[in-house]
Length: 138
Image (cartoon, rainbow, N blue to C red; front, side):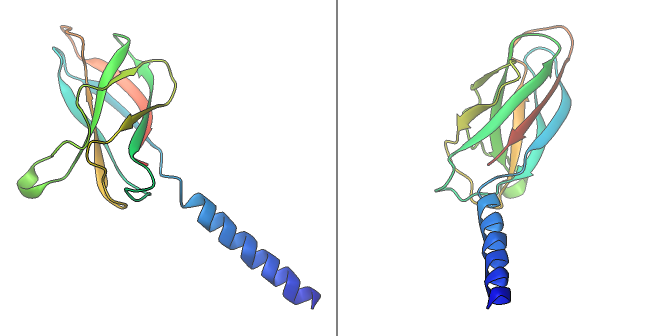
């Protein structure tokens, strides 16, 4: 009886850990260079861990920015014939303050969808701007 109770407790704990962690998405890091003169780049791709009804936003944190105080951030997905339709507004500003920001999707991608993070240098400069950070498509 004691052995059966211990096994049941271990099984319940294991199930709880798996269930609890399934709500969290992968956090991806990125490092790159944004082109001069308000250029944008597809900087990172990650798969969603949650379904569209559970989480309707992505999260991003800028940890390094060589010039300026913010970047524009939006998401896309791989479309037909190599197109990349936007999943969120390309004019979202994300401050360089080393804090996580959440941005709502206009079109919420399904669980398992590869989501592409785009960043834009909103400042007109004569040179490229280095950027680093973390993000999650949630």
